[in-house]
Amino acid sequence: MSEARTAGDLGRTEGQTGPAESDTSLVVVTGLSGGGRSTVARALENVGYYVVDNLPQALLLDMAELAFKAGGAARRTAMVLDVRSRAFSTDLAGAIRELRERGFQPRVVFVDADDEVLIRRFESVRRSHPLQGDGRLADGIAVERTLLEEAREQADVIIDTSHLNVNQLRRRVEELFGGEDARRLRITVISFGFKYGLPPDADFVMDARFLPNPYWVPELREHTGREEAVSAYVLGQEGADAFVAGYADLVNATTAGFEREGKRYLTVAVGCTGGKHRSVAIAEELAARLRHSGIAANAQHRDLGRE
Image 1 (cartoon, rainbow, N blue to C red):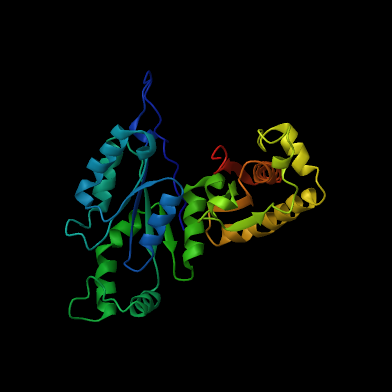
Image 2: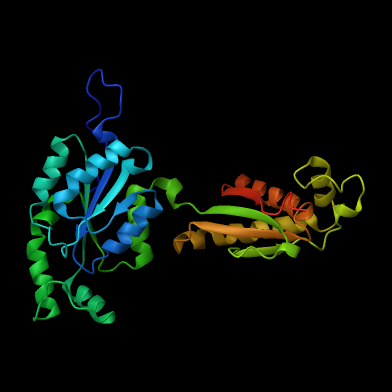
């Protein structure tokens, strides 16, 4: 498999101060139907690309120009070419050459798979091949291979998905285009009050109501778990440290597995009665311990100030 080229190799011309077209990260995704284009597109979205699916090849340059002019998040744009588009042609090399002459540096990803694998995939979902017409699946695949032969030759990256499952293909794309941070699990530790209901997106729920409630301590009642006095009171209670440490160990033990399975965001909910004292202090402490162990974690407080 050839290696992906790094965008921006053209650099800026001498004296240029504004952004150059080469600063726009463009990815062109094409390949065999059933090869995994949709999975590649979703993986690129996961690492921050704006994805345009089923784009007619004639509009490649126009889309690149729009991405360059829009700036911001659009500077990372992926364009997926589908053979079913009536505007698709075999002159991908010419379209890519036109982009480069304009100053862009697109990277072309071609997804491929063995004919037998493609046939099994189509049969498993009971779909016909878009180019088989009245013939067999194998006929449609053969026609498409011929149509895309030059595109495959021009690709910067060829990914054979014959022996890759969805998660493995996603990880491959993230390795090529995402960087380490994009593949890391991000954890939100959210405090809440049980009287306001459970957070619907919680993956783990911790119940801090076994700890004494600072609400019943007059000098602490009007303060919150983000303040030192309340935090010290909550974390100083018997069982509090073991409670936080146990959940920190649990999250640490599952992080690698969640990342392998493609989960990028995890929500750990910490509840107390009103979401003001105990849950807030515990959430802040747990997030801090997770960060200390190298996990990207932040604390949010859903019901703080709601009373």
